[in-house]
Length: 597
Image (cartoon, rainbow, N blue to C red; front, side):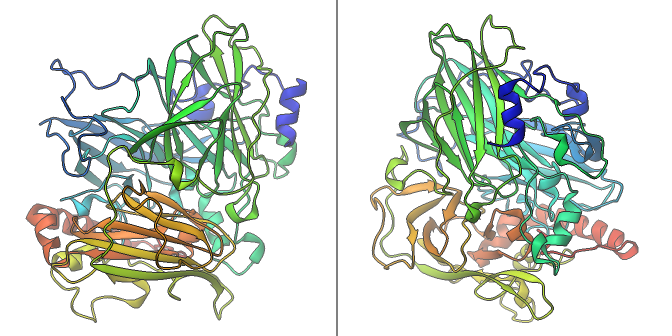
């Protein structure tokens, strides 16, 4: 047990927060009892917009409603000092808060986010990726510098506009170098059908390890020549951006308050509560539990599944689970919520691996220290078995995919002593001034001189290929990798130790689907997806440090239709953003020491 958790239980650390919410999280309400409870949908006076459609009778990829409504958000990114766990450091904030504001929509709405880059001290480019959305028809809105766009230059503005084509719990994060580890993350909720009914939606529960070093310093170490810095050790683990820290572990003289304050939640006796769990961390696998309570899992990522009960939900970086928890009719009204970073070396670790939050039943003193017993948790990096995660809307696996990609992932030290994570022996390094999508939209991908080999671009079939693409991944390392394919919810056909036998498919009539999938150490992962979304779609490890060191590829889909998908207006906006970035980068040094994404 970590030292800070031990102190909490023996009562050395006061339970009353020693810092204000403004000092720890800015203007954010996440982690406070004042955090908003969500409705089951945004009521516009005409009932649910998906009338008659539910999790079992509507194909989520082809039957999203068209509400005719655009929900609009205005985000300004700045850098300011905060103390989320009591240790004061610079944090990237959106509208003055960490974690960032909620993006909320109904299934079928258009979402419009106007982003102003006001990062200073130093100035940097940025891009926001709306994780999990397919961006069908809007591939230039995917938010990946050097792939879908140039970075947004300092003091420039970009407007993201895309359809909420899937429903459930998502999140957004920077895809510019290691900015997400510096605080540039936030939750997304798209209201849609639910597998089971519930009474209260408590909203997002963001789980994330926390680093006291600035992400720029961490990235320098990750791609540097000192092996002790290649796998950063997190300082803490947090729930909704809050946790106490044992300040005796800090020896650099930075201001530190040991009892910064924990996140708090309210339960109503006998009511069923929906919690939207998000692993918004940079690297670690999280094991989430609530003392004394069972959880019913109803969705993974943006995929409603057949409900099942568990005491522990395991999430790799980028993964989400929606769970229902029915409050007890118990006299005990205070319980610990916990998220524990897996202790296995293959899926990262932390000085303080246990994050705590307090749950209070109605009428209980909210300064009471819970005295509840933890569920046992595993030390492994694995998600729940594929057999346990059955999508409610069945989609069979195509036994004869139109194209198959074989990708080997490895780590090596190059001739200059720098670590590289490679895809088929090639580490990725993007060009901020030349996004691949702009070349695709201009029809230039057939020119072999247009693509640099370090961009790791693969073609999923010929220009007109339809059907399915299968990707067979082999992990030649001892670390687990949460793999994420943009533009799709992919079917998970097989995962396990060693190489794939080329035949075994888990539940071929209806394989598990999600947008992040764990590639086991020294093992394999086989995914498959429909070739129905023209674009250039990144496939990468969601461990920030592996991504920075090159574990990234792009898959071109239906190249001949990409220009039409982007459209004239999209090409003009891409050009404008690149011209602004070109102008800024000509007069400023862009210190791109890592892959850039």
